[in-house]
Length: 272
Image 1 (spheres, helix red, strand yellow):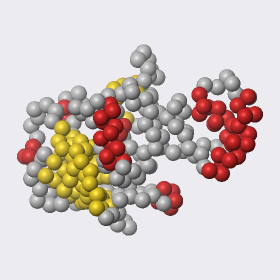
Image 2 (image 1 turned 135 degrees about the horizontal axis):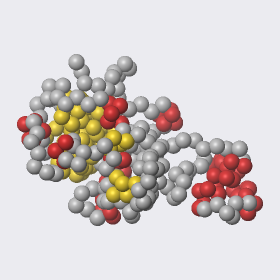
Image 3 (image 1 turned 90 degrees about the vertical axis):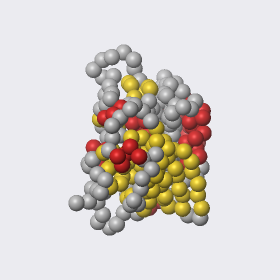
Image 4 (image 1 turned 30 degrees about the vertical axis):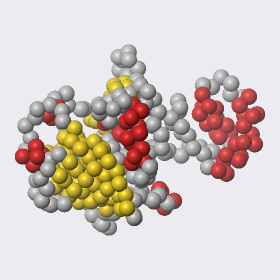
């Protein structure tokens, strides 16, 4: 349950139980704001507690939520709220156009949307973060995985009045450099296609600033990602493991990435 309007989900059997007691329960909670708080209270009376599900997003922030979307938890994306007060999630688009663009990926492989995968290219000293169906970040050098899991603070607090609590969040954040040349190079989703059980997505470079990069990064214009379609069964949802990826060698203007299941003891890190 994402309190405030971000949505909630209950099981079929619990819905039947709730339906039988809902009318009497609602009479006891007229003072609560919103249907989610009332439903939460009714479920509590039935003896059912919340199950934490990080795929619901209330999005009580403003501005650019790139940092939030590009570091999504290892969980299916279920909801995004308050998108009317944040910037369009893709550049050079309106909010409506940007959401329609995201749904090109949602319609092909909904379980994989925003799932974060990391590749390391030892030969060119690159770290690549893939937020599938949305954006790819290319970092120069070796960046440790735990650091990349933290959200870049591209957004602003929901409350405009500045106080000690306004910038406190329920997740770990890292600073987003003001200098665009100190940021990773970003490639946004361009197109999605599929065939049989394979999906491929293309991402195009977003130019920001006139930065001096390594020759490998300067030449890179497009990235294509191949991935198997992700079908979530009950076991996969409960025991979800981040997948691995490989960067195909010998790229110039176009990089090719293959997402796959990790090996039994495989580590997601720069190979030494």
